[in-house]
Length: 474
Image (cartoon, rainbow, N blue to C red; front, side, top):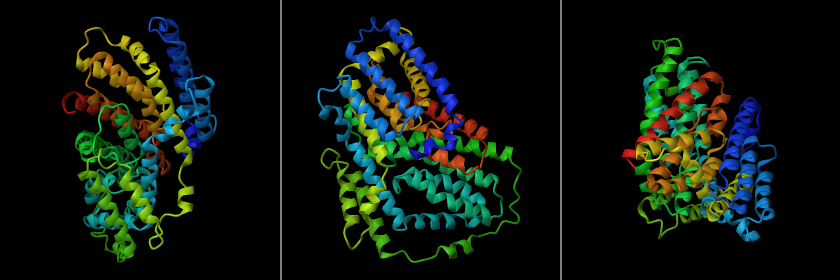
């Protein structure tokens, strides 16, 4: 969350302010006009007021994230939206929060043990035939890597030095199409690939928990993979083809005649026998993933394997998890997620989400078919997502409102829920829409105009892919 308060964020602040004020004004006009018609109660109007404050805190970021999250909890009590403090902080009981933290710790352990080195050596061996081989292999590898390394940011930080080293070795220059393409893969495709498994990062973990909390579906690890991976892979491949052609046309054609035929010298630098500790970490992590695949989540809670694994990594003879590691975790994000879940619970329990859905239903013409209804819902989700910086806060606000809408028009809940998740998780129009796209923009591999253009195209491709998947696949 510290990243979004950077100088780069400030350059977009005016755009967000103008857009945010415009949307709020439109919503206020709608509420004033239709509040009586849609039968908003006094409690529901107070809930909407707190929701507006929460969105303002998440978008404009006027105060530190942790303090803003505490304010939201306090407002739930001040406006009597929660009967007790226990009810106000109920969001902190969500398993998703602790799931995210367990995987954050495990991701740090994997890097500390040198598992990222194995990945780097694999890519180096794959690049022996020159840049053309890595151009094909890097995105394919990135689309599967979330299974092994559950953090998009960790994957980015692991692959960026490797891309720079290969770019230097191939003598292609700092602004080379190869480097630009590689940064796109680890900054954007990497972000999309996070969703192929719900253990791929914080956002899919959060999304899978929402599916369970709202009693839509209790998907296992393999169920999620089979549903989400195909459309994400299709969208990623289409985007990659476009980006490759775009970069090729915008840049000078590279001659590979002087490029070394192998990366043996780099491989020599990275040679070294895997340590016993690394083997222990790798095998135990594989056992955890295998447990998710073969066990029933109702019999073996999803949170149990990573909890046991963290404890295992902390035993004295391994000593890869310390108190210092725990203190370094993003506790601001913990407060944000907990407060968001609490607010989401209030929206659902007092009927505010359902009433908002009825208000939004007026956009859909009477007698509209499933295709038109799904398309309109997708457009609403796309527009709402644009005004949020992080996908986690966006999904918590958007999900209950739109899912209530589905019940009103009789749409199947599972396809619609996955549609929301895919659209929210794949938006990368602005660099600040996700952490990895922000980090990619900081490399200066491409201009801000190129970032917005490619991000808009990519988000549109995933938007269309999500609609088609909801209608014909899910």
